[in-house]
Amino acid sequence: MKLDLSKLFDNPGAEQAFDCSLTLEGVKRWGHRLFAGPVKVSGHVQNRSGIVSVSYQADFILDAVCDRCLTSLNRAERMEFSHILVLSLNREDNDELIVIPDGQLDLAELAGSDILLELPTSMVCDEGCKGLCPECGANLNEGDCGCRPPVGDPRLSKLRELLGE
Image (cartoon, rainbow, N blue to C red; front, side, top):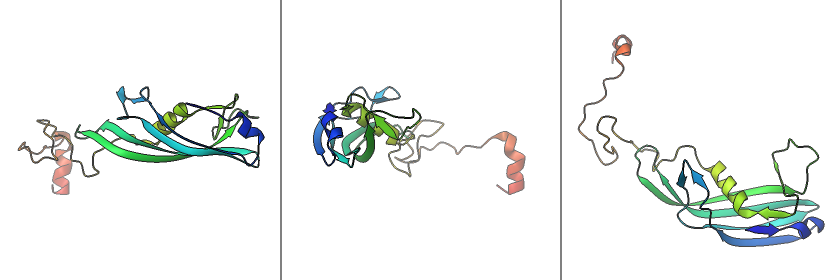
């Protein structure tokens, strides 16, 4: 979805609200889709004394897999973002401003990028997730698998003796 903001840049004090559902099927993480349904985006764009800013929130169902135990994650997420928009830059090295030279803001591209940058690098079902057994592959969150505990690296056996382990 594109928002036409060309008139908003010329009118200090002007404001434009938006509320839409975006289908972000193309946004993937490690080859897997991230969203179990549309992303609901709502917010507003305003021109305050010639400075145009966009603020919005994105509500979605995260569809991922736990990095420790490989169970499916489906949880509701809400993220809030704000940016300053400009038609052009005097210097090309400013990453804090979003340039929209034609006055058209691509909301799907902006929301997709913002959400990807905000997501954690490692997704876990719970902070206390025990993961999978390295011997048999059983999910340790569901109970003990009965495998013997890991012996450890044999090269560090002398160090374990010194430490009394």
